[in-house]
Amino acid sequence: TAYEISACLVGSEMCIRDRPSSMATVQTRFTIICSTTADQTVALLGNLPELGEWEPSRAVPLTLVSPDSHTWQCSIDLPTNKTIEYKYLLIQQFKHRNRIIQWESSFANRRVVPPNTAIANAIDDGKFGGSPTNVTTRSWIQNDFELRIHVGSWSIQPGFSNNGIHEISFSEIPIRYLPGIVLREKVNEQCYLALKPISSEVLLHTENLDFILNAPSMDHFHFELQVIVKVPSANPVVIGSLLMIPAEFKDLNGSITRPIIRENSYIGDIQIEYLVISPFIHKNNNLNVMKSIVWSEISAIGHRGYGASHRTFVVENTLLSFMSAYKLGIQYVEFDVQLTSDKVPVIYHNWKVCTEKKNQIFTPIGSLTLKQFKNLNVRNENHSKLSEDYHSWDHLKESFTVFDDEIISYGKTDTNPIPIRKWNISDNSFPTFKELCTRIPVNVGFNVEIKYPPKNQERELNTAEKNVYVDAILKVLFDFSNKNRPIVISSFDPDVCVMCCKKQAKYPVFFLTKGRENSYNDYRTESIEEAIKLASSVSLRGLVVEARVILQDFSLIQKIKNAGLY
Image (cartoon, rainbow, N blue to C red; front, side, top):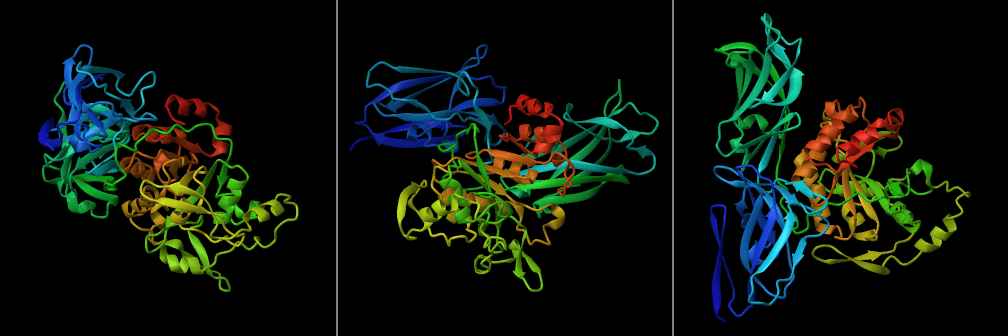
């Protein structure tokens, strides 16, 4: 078969593609309206080789044809009479590379079937994000590492004070309020922080209260942090600085205190809290499956399946509990996921489990292998005392007393069909996350609560590093979850929520918060206002708030809605 060669220029790279010349094609012109800055461009990505086959690095750039109307266009020869799926991306252009910063995330990809005609086909796609609702999502990190820097407490030598609240900004742009450094003699000066990457490979911006650095590897994370005082009617003065190098972030998550130096003299300290987020690489973590899921009205969510053990007749977080919820029409089930010592996600609520009843010895889940955890045969002490008041019990018992190998339906992951089986009443063991994904009917939605302990308990509970922890859970989701199952992710740990947003965009993420002081000792967890700021800055889907906080202040509901959150 004779072939013709087609090429498209993507960034600074040339992509060569071939296709049979006998295939009928028609020139198709795509038009979209998108407001951009001087260093931004719009690109097109879709399911065909001509459109990059959902690989972001092969996206087709558009040309700005009308700056006044923000109109972008591109023309591509596409096969006729074939359904084409695509979406638009917003790309930030940097000196050495480009990065997707926003993508369309409506419920379905845009679609078109080019007609078999000699006349060029014109497609007017309206506004970026779609109309009437502008449905877009900030991009996740595909190949970069992300370093998040939060500046905490200040300690200044005599001659300086930190008794005022002053505006801290990056590049003269106000981004936060923080107890600042001011000269004792002049209390009206504004104090600024300027972060200057040393490597040209680093992309820098701000989110809420944090400096965000992105780079192709951690080796590029070295920078200078300057403390600047701006005096009215005078040039800004650098009163001190500190230098950070990549080796200081080897633990990926932590807090470090570094000296502020002024003219080779020590003048104080700055505490820096940092979080490094590594990319989650998975074949299904691409733009084809990325969709913004609206949290539709839900009438019932089963807490730990059919409810906490002390409130019902089945053990919480067991297969029997989840299937009981399904049999009684529960739409969603919530459950707790944590890792064993061999990095297997399991469903269990408490941080520790009783491994020796006689001496009341409790062992962290993170210190047990999967085999040890399964062999414990964990039981709730009240589980054997089934109340006679549960009139539905006999009906449930009949429903579950069937052969284990009876297949009732087949679910589908992105790769293989998975049999959904019924099970016996005796199946009240605590499952792995994989077992839950493959054995619960696909019309039952999941609220996956990722449990991660406060920093002061991580060592005691033998908890894996956060990137390893989150990646292990995401891998099970992307490997075994049915594409038709509604799924959301949630966590009380704000960093886990941020990581789940930055590592993937397929599943919406909710921040669980009590909105008051708690064991996490993190300002983002201690008020609803701070939770809203966090959720808005990283595109969380919404908040799950303790009811008593809302009952004390109903205005919080409107504040959350005004922020575009659920």
